[in-house]
Image (tube, rainbow over all chains, first blue to last red; front, side, top):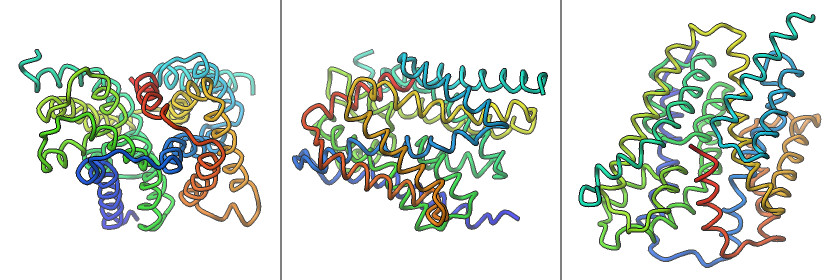
Length: 107
Length: 246
């Protein structure tokens, strides 16, 4: 059974935290951060977070490891080529879909 | 257009809106797939307005993560907004009152930040509000659509759609990783830490929310210590947000 109270509480916590990260610097700090360590840390954060969320989970996100590898391969290739977010995502989904249809035919 | 800043903002927000509909559509699909009711996904989109944070929050809610863990993960993932808000605070009209600063900062997403920072004028409240409104509608609408039509999607299509979010993440990470050795090293280290916690006995008992937090402090902490970045931050952040997203 889904606990709706828990879902609403979680959404509220997320909303408040997200809002505070955006609002506090705008309202409180009119000067720029000069501390190089903090600036550098914040600079690296998105890359660490996105990489950690993507690997190795993406390998197990589809119906089979093979189709996941095909999808990831497609994303890596197009991303490396510099295509933007949406085309990369859509093409990768298409690659996984095609691969799984082919696998169904072969196996 | 220049003398109607609200309309000007709405116009600049249109491409963001279109991109948001597609991304939030996937989010809506995932919400329903994970068993969340439609209103919960839409409520999250309307109160959070952030992609990566919502995807992470969704998976934590589903996997039974605690509120503290969810809050900490959201904080870590969205800490980048703090940096962006700092930059934005230098870009907005100096006379913008505190209350208005508090209002427009709700909409300081990667894409809106990028759009504002690349304008050649000081950002005013009407301009930014117009942009936020259009983008916000796209984000909420896409979520609702995705959550509603999921049940109509065949299983084979849903399996493939799971790859969308990872494809997006990869598309965000790779262009800057290709340009900067520091970013590439950051990505490789983060993947190594992530895999370590995913496959090692005992360590893998830790929920993924905490792994993200640990990985961030370890890798970003190490990189900031060994490879501090100086003035390139602002420009790269804009470039990243501008080309990585639609």
